[in-house]
Image 1: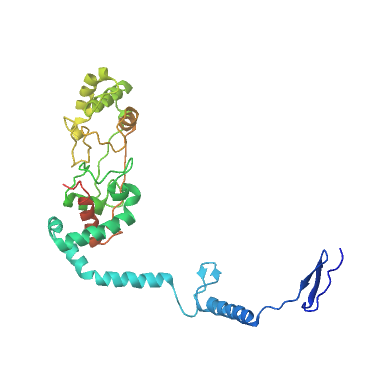
Image 2: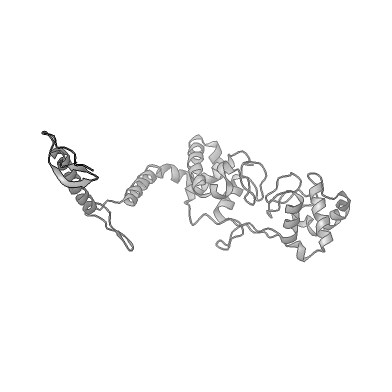
Length: 286
């Protein structure tokens, strides 16, 4: 390709050429270069002043000693100091009086919601809506009671854990290891009849006898349950693990064993009382 003619006012070229196209040697504006150099100097200062270079167990701290974690710790300390008085009042108040004290109840609901959304929502769902295997906290069906005192005890010590000697504890046996398979089927059909349609109506009468001999001691004669043992009410069609035939057959055959950790080692007394008040007012507190 022929070389392009050079015009009179054209700047010099860099000497590079591609397919006959030459590159003009146009210097960058000096103001742009000085800004560019300044950003380089600023970058060098920044990586010296602030945490920047990754190391094996952390990063360089920087001579200014700046830390996001330290800043958050300061903010948390300031918030705790600001709430110290109301937290002390909440921690020492009688549980029964919290819902009737406007100042305490308002603060407890707000603080309790924050605690719940941080620690409890993963299992119990938004606003206590629950999941399969994790109780709904917004209805009036309580395995261990729904009074302020009951909820406080449950939150404090948990359920069936090995960390707290005062944990709520009950254990349903795996009746598949105790009863004949036909007896399990009969019991399941009887339980289904307490709140709806059984899978096999012909099995209900025999299932009532099996239930009376093996289940009534915990779930009560009419299936209404026992909060002192954490035994569910079987007549209200509210099911923790599902109330269809297959789910109930699995429950009776192999049992269930839900565990909740104690929160006394993770939360302060005021936080436990706050989340107790929040759960109590979700709609199902007794």
